[in-house]
Length: 263
Image 1 (cartoon, one colour):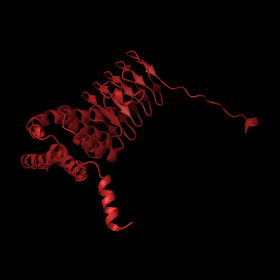
Image 2 (cartoon, one colour; image 1 turned 45 degrees about the vertical axis):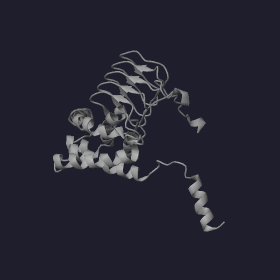
Image 3 (cartoon, rainbow, N blue to C red; image 1 turned 60 degrees about the vertical axis):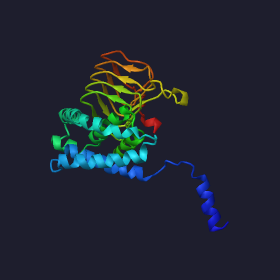
């Protein structure tokens, strides 16, 4: 096969006219700048908002494929929401420093806690997702996923003072609802009971009410599954049914003790 025929065959099979991978890198740059604008004391807010607007306009050109480019109107509404998002994130950080005895300062939470970083990028992406801006929110949360091991779909609805401890392996699905003052640990999955494309517009993931704690590697599945307020879900629990308020659910392992004759 000649070099020219190889080129032609590759071009024939490149079928996605809107697939530009520089969008991925541009989203990562935008996300970093947005995070620093909100949190880094040495980053000038006024200057950065102008730079962010220019970067956002570039993202619109890459990710908004409608002819009239209606996404250009998104930035003005989005930037007005940033103070409220920052206020929520400060409450998330306070929740972490107040409940984790290993945290030495709130500055440590902002700079060193992967759970907080994943929540921050989720909250920034969720507002764009709610507006209907295509692809960019998903790329933002996937960027955080790659860095932290925490996979939060931007469509999830998460209330105030949310805390993820350790973080690695956490999965929160698109239609999950998490209310206020919820704490979850590493390896927790809030997922769908089963996967089928026709369920795309249905609630597939669980609801977690106020003041719930979910310990490591617990799996909670299903759109009709509700974990009642003030409940504690123990590590390694597997739930596909609702749990009443004020419940404790735990996995009881079978323990066999070897005797001398068993050795």
